[in-house]
Image (cartoon, rainbow, N blue to C red; front, side, top):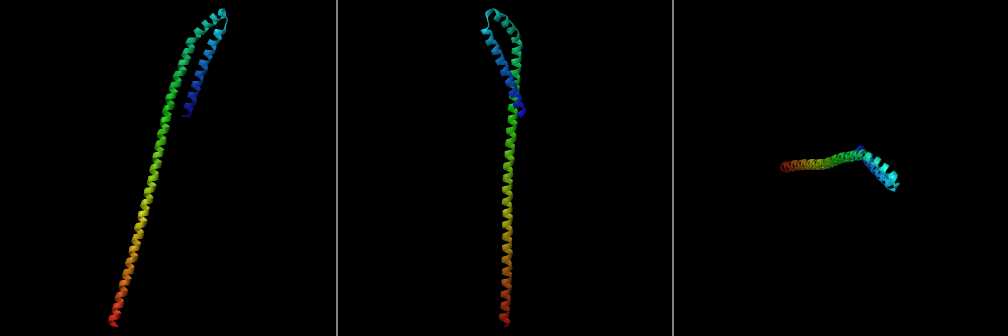
Length: 138
């Protein structure tokens, strides 16, 4: 994109220089003595066709480069939007992963608590049975 922008600036610069050169020639012709002015005006008019063609080519080139520049800008914006979309998806995927990990950790903690509770109940039940047998036998 930088290359297109540089070429566009160069084409615009050349176009401006060419137009300024023609304006300077016209201004200098108006300041000349009438006898000398006619000969110079004739020369200017003969070369004006070439100058007009050059200006038209430069303007056409500038329009072409402007179109290219707009396309490049659109491409850059599209890539930027795509990158931002990917970043958003990455953040969402990370949040989802953390949420799932937290659920797994909670499930594991719940299972451990249930197993611990079941062991205590089993041990307590065995202790009560043993105590009851001792009371019966005792």
